[in-house]
Length: 224
Image (cartoon, rainbow, N blue to C red; front, side, top):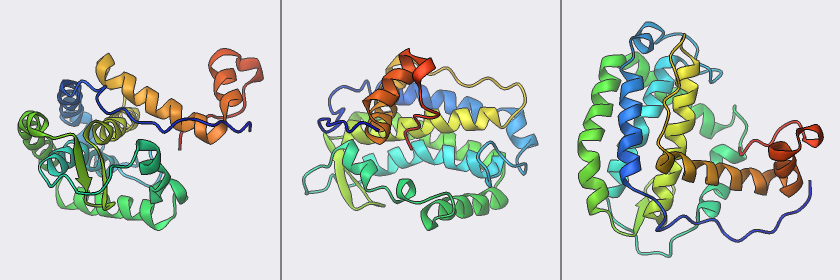
């Protein structure tokens, strides 16, 4: 891998916050699909995670947006998206690490306690609060589970990434259910984030060759 020196990634001020609401509408539609309930206890496309657990993890994303945007802004200097992901325990650990097993376990417990109707109700409740939360949000937010302050738009992009990626995971877990087609205003910052993380992980050559010269491409350019 060729070392690549890059400036810190920050998307503050570049996000159409209305795209978060539109992406959440698509999420709600996917969670409402009849196959989600029919396949609830089956293993999802995420190994070791049921469809129900994956659904709850997906629903958590707009819920966390409302929670964080409605909380205190934090009084420390905001970190960048790069720093946010560099510090993320789930990236540093493998799938059997405590951060990742903890996510699977907690969501499996919720999937057993409440089925599709409970998850759909939670998603709709978050959507109902989302517009006001987005409108009232300031320039930075405090993330309670990391103890860090980050730019509001950067935080929203991190949640959009989860929505886009896990919507694909959930659709892939079902039969013939199309992946939600997110608006460009939601998808483009997610692709910028994933490309940036892949570039930092694998270097310039791997990313450019995979996108433009597949005959010289490495086996993978995954962001995580």
